[in-house]
Image 1 (cartoon, rainbow, N blue to C red):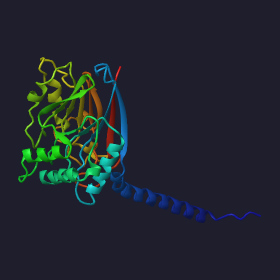
Image 2: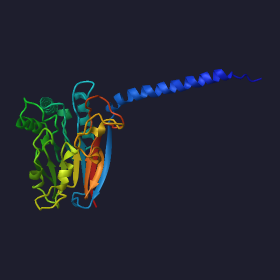
Image 3: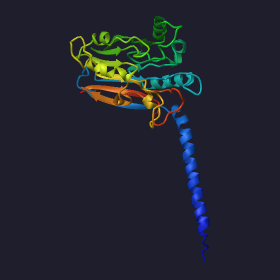
Length: 297
């Protein structure tokens, strides 16, 4: 005859199971945010644009921002080396950086000095690597901007500080427009936009998406808005955790705090970045390298 367990034993076993499951969920909730910063994903996005130069056909652009290289448990130099190797492995035509390489101008200077001296981790994109600076890169009393520019260039990364770079691709020109940091730098939006026309194909970089409303209303040298085609931004970390915000995004409209948005034909990306700030945790905001493939129709 089958033996039956008393009801009180069945209830006890059920309660034990529920408690074990709850403890497992709690442990995962505590551990996972500490583990996610060590993950890295490549988000591939194809952009078919009728204004993209037809003779170029395809351009692969790697975009990364907000490394915040620092000591353990934050984003270490060793992890940054691995990131640069992974970017090289993607074989991009262009590499673009959105700023906040480290936590201060002094550390950013050392970061690029070390990058210059480590041949294995230098970047080798077809048409070069370019960068704007974030508020952390511009904060420091012991580093002059010309000194930082010189070291960045020697490391193979061209800074765009209120500047426009013309990149020749085949018989066409792609323009890269970079603005100085909104909070710690001296941005000159009119000077940057004034070098470009709506008919140019322009990738616009600025560390903080706070600039987007002004950039959208600014006019180019032809007196028209829409002087850039793709905007790339960072700074917010996407809140760093999807359930709230550890990285305060004062002055930034909610629709410009994370992800893709399209307005008046202009496509804009606010990246969640790579590193962390305040606390070394992420939750559903995995560190991301963006690989954009620009295509002509």
